[in-house]
Image (cartoon, rainbow, N blue to C red):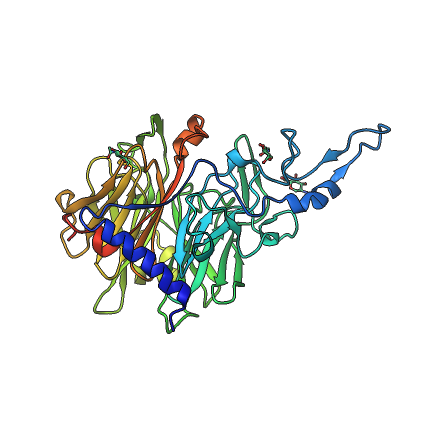
Length: 435
Ligand SMILES: *[C@@H]1O[C@H](CO)[C@@H](O)[C@H](O)[C@H]1NC(C)=O
Ligand SMILES: *[C@@H]1O[C@H](CO)[C@@H](O)[C@H](O)[C@H]1NC(C)=O
Ligand SMILES: *[C@@H]1O[C@H](CO)[C@@H](O)[C@H](O)[C@H]1NC(C)=O
């Protein structure tokens, strides 16, 4: 049974498709100058004030306050608006999950969503904490969320993500607790699993910015998570069934020193980010699937079979032989954050940071520069596409967040800095070499 809410959403989407029937570029869905939240933490003033203690050595001293937002004078619970930069976007049945990693102080909740039925009319909707505000308060419990970069939905209607456990404040990084892998049931919004990544795998959680899930809908207990580690240049594999994690190391996870110069949004800088994104290709006749991956600071694409990754003993091999293979270069300036394979079109879509756009490659064609197409590119509107996901209806979702400007300069609060885009994969490939 389709709910009226769902049908309404389809109607809205249908009308938009009619309007954009020709060029089929990415469609802007939301845009923000600055982010805002339904719960900025104002209701938690009591909590924060409880963490204020007067200096026992000075009579009538002003209390010293712990917790976020005791700096800067104006106190809006834990909220410092400018510091909230959205990073990830994932759609599931009317809810759009948006993350705000804690890279600065003043972020009320790191995992959030937009309720499309209630707030889809707005150009700049407020975010709602997910699954609730309390779970996003890292100080309230030793298991609560600290910082989340990107989320994904698996074939079993579960939301997966990694909490890096780290406050990544410039010059003051704090590993609050172990990084952890989370699985949430989207039917009940209940946490099904929280797995702490042991110190033997990674020292700190920095660099665990995305996750891909390998599971069949009938075998939900037998899921594998592939977790690129862009800092340590490792590929971690977690098995839900055995509740174990292991790591691969290979040269193909390294950045390319010829591709680490970036020029985005007027900022020129050098990033040495290694393996950043993994995506699962089509099922092969033998039931295996290829796992495509790339470092951010590179224009090369690589591939490994999921059969290789799923064997823990393979990780310990000193020589990986031909397991990890170079497919080739996607072409000049094609550095990409996230990419995603769409099973209906057999096309992989890439978020291209240097081209400020979305690229594509049809997996049935030879991997060559000529066979890579451009779906969309706009250097003033799509500055730093930080995430690209595809939902179960075959719609691509992209977040662009102007991050290099935030990191190396200052965002203009009067301009639109953050945008969410979408397009049907079947239309996005039209008129490109990925057709
Ligand atoms: C809350 O978190 C801050 C880090 O932002 C830490 O310095 C402080 O000690 C924490 N307070 C409690 C009560 O855990
Ligand atoms: C607190 O809220 C007020 C009113 O909405 C706003 O003007 C001020 O900038 C906020 N302070 C911070 C630190 O975000
Ligand atoms: C980017 O998008 C804006 C708004 O649609 C448009 O005015 C501008 O020409 C575009 N720029 C490029 C380079 O396509």
